[in-house]
Image (cartoon, rainbow, N blue to C red; front, side, top):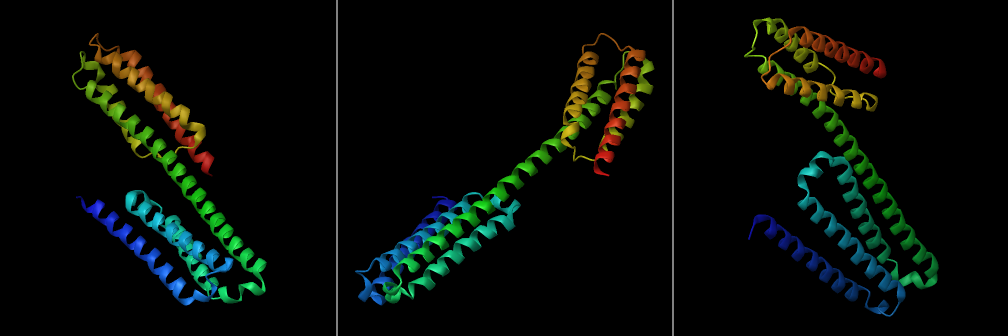
Length: 243
């Protein structure tokens, strides 16, 4: 049995113990109110709160790496679950007097549960949006990294030129690598397509040179000049979009 499975078994055991203890305490302290609807509302609400915390802890244990990246959001979920449990415990103290205003007692429970669900929903939406934004940023950063790797591959491909006249082009490729390396990796959506096109063009250049049919220095110089212009214009537009 793995450590993770053992931890889940321990957690399940603690959950069952909490359910049993809650039941015993409820039936012992409020034995006079067992026949009332308010008593059962409190008991069921207690089960719901404990189960919510149990599910929350299981999720944390199963997705620890993901949780580490969004600690504030997941911490807020835990706080809401614990606060709901505390509210239910507090309401249970008034089970014996609930018959004086049963509708209000029930309404308070419903409103508290609804508020907890709404808060959890808002927090989950926040976490999902943050995850999507982070994933988008990672994708944009990866594209720029791929452009740099493609240029490095091009520089390597030109390392054994068929003609000596490509030495200048290799220096141009080296300068392009430096240009990409120090570019802002957080690309706005308006430039994503442009980055992909630049990557495809560099990969096409790599493929053409790797065929071994020789290197046309003039054509290569023109392609690199155009590529430098596109990268420079990309960085200019990026700076302008953030100013």
